[in-house]
Image (cartoon, rainbow over all chains, first blue to last red):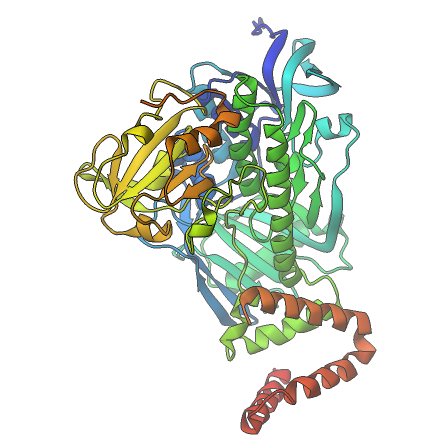
Length: 546
Length: 59
């Protein structure tokens, strides 16, 4: 069989090791910012099996920046709450914050291979800037002062590529991390969970379901999540004395699954798709930047599965990194900007690990003390609602970047509420023309300055800072958020008052929002010079005032 | 107590229980119960909590 191979480039701006959901999303984000990348993926296609399944609201927003959100929402199953059971009765029914004016559901369940497919297609739709090579493996990385040499083993032989930047998105057993001689640091929990995907039709609503010590599997903890294509994801804990190799054999798995499905009244025919085993890990590199080599996703950190912050934090890494790497690669920002990627995202990981540890201590109690307290909490919680927060699984929330070097003190002291620098810019439902418009849909490209007013109208000096002719993350959009009046190209109407409330906004309040939707600084009265000074170190350009 | 504070105290209690170990746990928990009970202003409520805990311990 004749196979023609695409030639390999000798040099690339960014080499992304690993074409999983984080690598593909990063490639799509970089391409949108005008940066070419070469993605090296060892498999010959999207992942198989049961991996990440819960996509948070923030992840949906990030995929929205590259146009992959609609496919995700159309295919995925949204959910807003769940139930926990102790033995034979329900002890908790929780709902996550959600209301009809939100743009996305708090969580969407979808198989990881769909997330990869949608991110890949988004990358391919960005004008050829993302070059994805399947069945190709990074086998060596040689870091240099101004880049790295990477050896790749592909079907057509071994190739060496010179990259300005290498981003390791190659997962828990990262080759890039191994090549640099780096180790993840932290702890692991002993408790092991078997995960099983089965196909079975159901009438049940889509909710996160958890059973503690159910009659179907006494002494165990069982989680169930619904996925598209009539799939259940089932996680159950095995005893400390069970052999993990035996535990994943179908003859040991299927009867336990059958017992539980029968107990909960799911009697449609079913068949297994996938079985594997894991234990919760709390591990991270101390830094995600090593010269010209950066780490994102599982290559940099592993967090416990409970609390669903694994893939979600990986996508958040990509969202934080892409705009910074683009500005640095274009020579508009000093490469020290990438140190803020590491410090912000390492801080996020530590927070995610702390939350994940709390979840794990409840879902897989690591010692006698946690086991005993859980026995008490599960019995008491239906009679003492103050305990609900302990039984409630902790869900993914966007992290605040405390003490980030990018946070501006600006006029922070003049505010009593709203989002500080380093917090995500709050969502609000506004009106643009005659149609509703979510404020978050205006983030994710370049910088955005929000000017709050009772009536439409931007001060000329601020309006003149806008750079509609600039593409990529250096661009500045200036928007008026007016309480009432006519919307136009630069004005959104805050009819419901959500934006003014959530931003603690008075007449003339200005927020500067980063390309990743995070607040950089806020003022009660901002001059053009204030905004220019804030942007200059990042975008290199002098915004010309009228 | 806020939820983070409840997290913190629950964790401290679980870890202390693990440290004292199974044999000493009843003594530890009894000591703690007395300390917390003396901070309970309402005797009727304390008696109700005792009854509740006894009932739940038998489930």
